[in-house]
Image 1 (cartoon, one colour):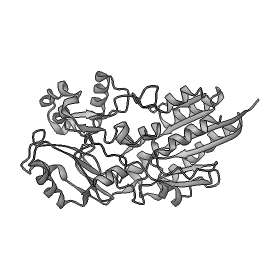
Image 2: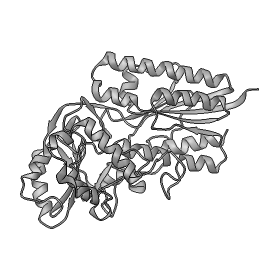
Image 3: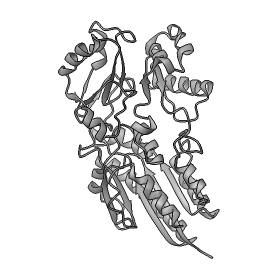
Image 4: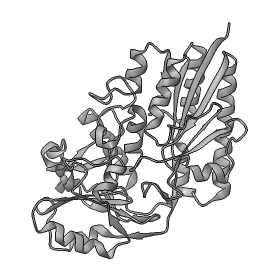
Length: 382
């Protein structure tokens, strides 16, 4: 006998509102659609927001790294930084990937962990935000995540394993339906990779969306075999902004007379620089230097608006956000520009996220953080 309802939420990383409309993605299957205000930051801030309904100011995740010498877990490893020569070898992507896997195992991290291009000598100054797997029970410490809440409510649910490929997660979702799960949160990330490399290649983007569309229809049909009603909703975290230029902020800072770790600290993400002022001379020097770059420092009101304001200034004493499309190269994230990047101002046309559904989307769902309450409300009706 068929179950009454199966509720499916499919997360598609980087499925922006502009891309959805440019390609008329799944308009017939999912006619209820809405532009959503992205969570300021990257996936490292958006995913914990989706899984908890809390902002970065509350859950503490903005950039992957933050300047925090007092809590850095990497102090012992950083003492060996002088051994990792030449830097050109240790900055290679494949080498960094394997070194990241080793450190993840050594430190017992279960969340997403990558060194990217963070200088090894700087690690002693850095803490890392995603030490735990955010998707499992207790993954966000004192903050109840989706797994915690669904478990407490006795919902028969399935949440994807983010370590797996998209294909594996679609397959696992189908098996979960067959095994009696009524609520599914399915995680996919491959679109993000395609867009970072081919955001301006219309045919490549269309081909990828067509591929996703086939998997969506298949998953929906599978659910229809087991339930009278299938509620299918796609959610995303942000869009993707095409490359418009690059700036080298790191070199300018390194030659300004200030000493990293003594006068200032900084994290150089792909689209923003977060500064920590360690003495009174740092702020005027850095403020003056940053006038040469296309962007601006966020005001306190903007930090509050975007859900990233913290009195303890854990995210930085000042956050400089680049103009849309401009990337910091080199940065702590990489040594070359990508054709597409996210993490710019949320009001940029390429930044908006999207929600698509075959069920009406409540008016109160306006931003990424609102997905959480929508998922819980839908789950409670099963």
